[in-house]
Amino acid sequence: MKWIVGLGNPGPQYEKTRHNVGFMALDGLASRHNIQINQSKCKALIGEGHIGGVKTVLIKPMTYMNLSGESLRAYMDYYKADLEDLIVVYDDLDTEVGKIRLRYQGSAGGHNGIKSIIQHTGTQSFNRIRMGISRPEPGHAIVDYVLGTFPKKEKDLLTGMIEDTCSALEYSLSHPFERTMAEFNK
Image (cartoon, rainbow, N blue to C red; front, side, top):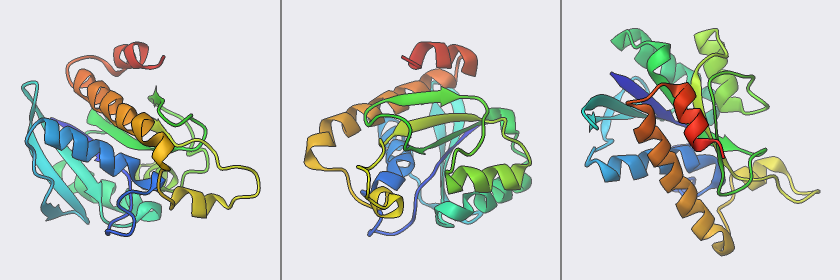
């Protein structure tokens, strides 16, 4: 079984914000494979299905971004899920809008959702897909930027990035993550 955690904030006011690209990617993957993410468990919304013959669980923590690790840990403990089968999908300021970067370890890099996951798992070693949101112009507050929506001019980049993320996730289910990184880190 593989489990994929998309990071974001619950509620309609956050739905289309930069900070919610992790949720957007999971919604895209769920749509491709007719998986409903609607079961409320472990402080998250969860959907289960098969993707390419692999049992896959899609998880959207409902704890708000800064507490994402609570939900991930609750799921891990309850279902005895293995960290090696996990992929976390989230927004990244240091990656250009439209681009994705895959890694299997590293620091939180200032991302509070990842910081929470590291605190709750006790490790920086877990697979991740960082979705680019770029940095704001100098003088703009980061919190306002990440909680803002994508401008119209970035709509095509966002759509392409969600498609690339879904493709990378699908590929990762039947290939080692290192091979997935080689394939999708362009």
